[in-house]
Amino acid sequence: SNEDLFGLVRRHLARVGHLVEKDDFSYRALFSSHTPEKEIQRWVASSLKLVSRGLYAVVRENELADGNKVDISALVEGLARVPIEVKPLGPYSLNQLTACISDQLHAKYMRPRDVKFGTLLLVRQVDKEWDIGGRLVPFETLVEAVRSFATEFNAKHDTVITVEIIDLLAPA
Image 1 (cartoon, one colour):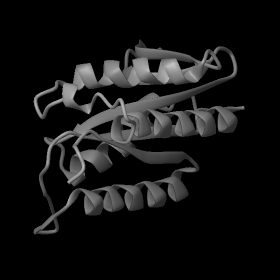
Image 2 (cartoon, rainbow, N blue to C red):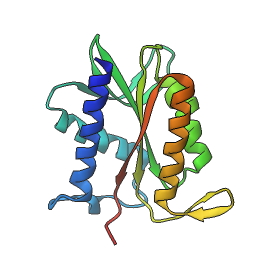
Image 3 (cartoon, rainbow, N blue to C red):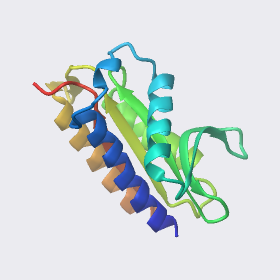
Image 4 (cartoon, rainbow, N blue to C red):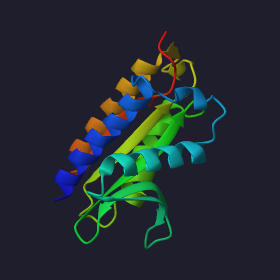
């Protein structure tokens, strides 16, 4: 089902994150604050494909009927599709990330209406603070704010959009 695929994709994204964040053979040093979004999308798609073990297909920038291109889709042909929008953090503000949920992921990629599940994947690649309500806040506070928006949005639109994270920064 769509829900089963969504749960599996979420677990697999967590596994991909764990491999780069905590694994003894982490290759986080291959990334920098200048790694382009396109390359991060490729890395996420490739890593997700490896951990999927053929249970679902992973497609990057697949074009939908209306011409929109999803960063990554996890799909089981004829059964279910989960769109994943990848946003490497650095240049994106809270307003841009919440607009990504409503105007991009939901409005463009979660079509037709039976696509009820989607993921915004935030990839932290720079150490910075974000301006929220005139205050500079750390990464964790930004993530909380985006997740809070997603929760409220889901309640209003009968969707399940989650905000997942992968942290490419080395632990302090």
